[in-house]
Image (cartoon, rainbow, N blue to C red; front, side, top):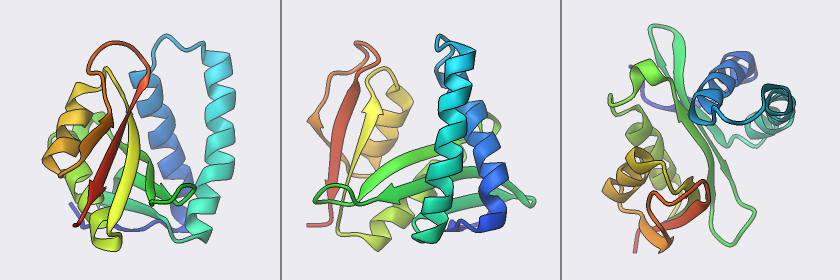
Length: 150
């Protein structure tokens, strides 16, 4: 597995396919037609923006993209907007490498994570994130988490 590298234009299709597959796996109750339209829009808009802003990162294994992260700065702190790892490559430190890359680039970060995404919450806590607003396992609402180098 490679270290994270910046996402390139030629990665967009593979990243989009990974995003759609894993998002659907994690949100099986969303209606397919509405979900597909929303995901298509996100892939068409968000990924090219991440490439243009040099704020998207990918990890590869054997030439295949197995995880990605996008960073934005819509708030006072840089924000981990999306982080997805293919289901067959989870628990192999892919997400940890991506989060560590973000921490190398910034002095502080924020993110939101679904309350029922217990493995993701534990990952972020291991990476030093603290809950700003958290309720674990209650519903599909999102927790707010922050990290600071200081």
